[in-house]
Image 1 (cartoon, one colour):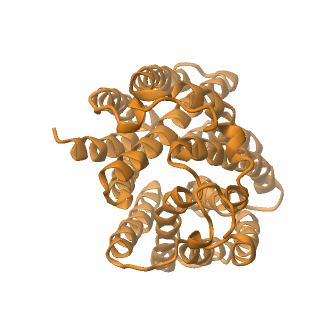
Image 2 (spheres, one colour):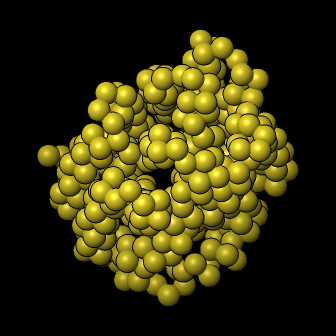
Length: 384
């Protein structure tokens, strides 16, 4: 298998391996748990991710370290999956979700970080690889929605477990990166990132924009269920949103001389459509149409994110920067998700999306004022 094919295949089987996450909340709802209870369990995913990322950042050190890491987290995620349905206790389910979420943290950040460096070293377009993650996400949600409706949560877990094994095997066959053979330099560290002014501004942007995008996606399936929509509607809306995301990658890859800051500025404006559509309880057929706007927003955000980061930090710090950004982002997603579960019981799901829309507007304003254009920043983060 060619090296490019391995990276693309990894993205697809990764998404299939974690396909069960959106259905945890529905599984708990079927068990009769309250909004506060499944909101608390759902918040474990980003909170566990935030706690695990610094630890995994240490282990994710060179080719051999990454292979050991992926084997370990693949085993952990499979064991955690079966704990969720093997025991009836909510406490055991919460523990299982915590450890599965910690394992997902290593999967997600490592694959993006390694692929980014691979693309830099080979002069290839990152979005041409990241699009396969979106494709895998579509396949995972279509399969997950069908399996959940027809056979239940256990069937979703079976496919996830098999895919996690394939991911570990495929990852183990990646060739070492050129950067793995370079001597480690002491100055490349977390400390260096936090003296980088451009990176701090980027981190605040991520906290506002990426957090709200993830938060909306977390409660998407719950909102649709509360409106009485079947699970397959979630599969369709996901296919439309992520399909548009892939198309956005393709178009952006063909265009030249576009500012990454302009993309980051436009992203929250496109994401607003989904938030306000849900708040206004628009008919299902219009939700399908507006999902294209959400797809454009996430496409712009994902496409520009790693490219902008590559411009404002040194190459050695790209993976570290992704870990730090993901850690902060997930911490705030966890806090928002925990609060959102309680808010559903008190106010209703629609007000979660109203609040998300307000924060996305704030993200747009912050970007316009404080985020510097990439050609105005050097690799050390100093403003030019």
